[in-house]
Image 1 (cartoon, helix red, strand yellow):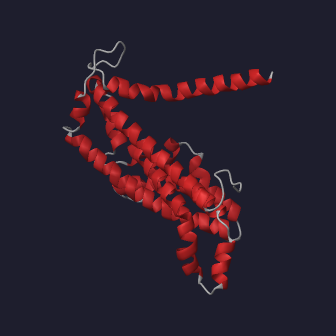
Image 2 (cartoon, rainbow, N blue to C red):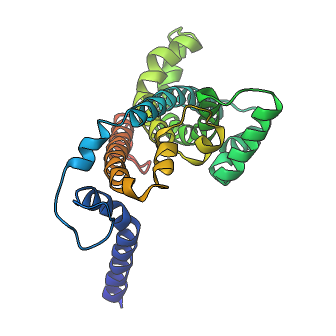
Image 3 (tube, one colour):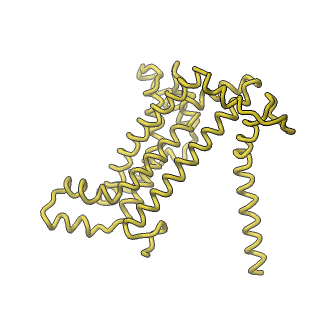
Length: 271
């Protein structure tokens, strides 16, 4: 019975992973296919779809917009997440749990609801749709992720280190700068990478809040209306998939390093 349960679990996990990642694995396969038709059997191997990406000026503009948005979003979200995590993990104040729950609401709300709501608010205040409206929307959905990462970082290191700094005469600002911040720095970097990845890949909010300057996901959506451009979309998707995986793996490695540096494992137990 024990062996049956073990192999059944392995079979379930394997099938789940195949179902989840197989569509993503098809991206590089069709990106190398020497045919405009995205279907099997393959017609041969080619790199021309990747070369075509370097010749498309509109793609370069969309990529530049996405990088600007993702960079500013990552910085702002991490700052907000750092402040919220610091306050919730170190101080007791009225409605602390309620406020923490409000910060996390964007994690469970459908993005299309968030996007429509933000569009209504922007229109009511008379603001023009621009890169900044997209940034504000992305900060809203990225901040909860940063709060989760930073809360883990603050809860993993020994508070007695801060207390020792207070006993030696350090102010709260100096203690945070010279003691707390270096210990949670891996969490800060992980938060930056995660929020950057989320912002770079986000489509729905960017679709509602974009003006004349579109982001890379919105540009890709526009290409889907032209079947002859699908191979280029596959090539571009391959680059995005590789970049996202690299950033997320880096964030996880840095997070684990921070946990070890604080004297705990990733599950919170002492070594």
